Length: 317
Image (cartoon, rainbow, N blue to C red):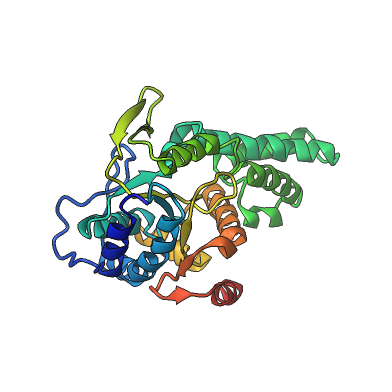
């Protein structure tokens, strides 16, 4: 098998590098992508690196081109980009070629349009639910419009004053959950095709680039002839929607840890809008449903968790 003995030797002798100097670090390929590596990210990457190297020897042996695909997934602010970049750089410095691919290039819509589509789905289906339940009337129409203008129509607390809003939120949330992380939102097929080509020994790949505007959409031809690892950093990196990932790594964060992190990123301590909070809760639920497939689960505090330990932690959160 091509280069397998050489790779095996490199894996056996792989050492996590000293990252005191972070200049010229590799990172994901999302346009404008910036990483801010902290000591916590280095700790997580160094924790999983030797165990990952051990498992990769088996994965490489099963591929005629000695190639493997790793994903680093998790919720908002958990350090996916930073951890994936550190792992990619660590393998690269040990002579094992790696490329870090950002899954955020693979929705069907640019971020602003996708955010708008998420909100549209929630609101359209919320109103339809009111109509279907025989609740909707002119007074509710006007009140709901005011709540929407104030971005309060997804706020659970508003249901105390407007009991009918619970039906609106339930139906809107149900439709939103079907859209988030689905093939309707994300181009899983294209990503599966890229992974298949990589594993089949392609020397070059055309990889998508998605910016913030409709005109910022293009493909770059990337030379992967010297790469043995494709590392996908993405919230949905452990999804059933696409195929080919050999070793998914879940960076876990409880809902409370996510909330605290997002608050800390705002100077005024402001919290997310009720709708954004709903989206994050639904994504958290999807991550939990997929967690059993993860090869490694790492807690926010930087500990390796068994799936049972993970379930216990989330049940207590």
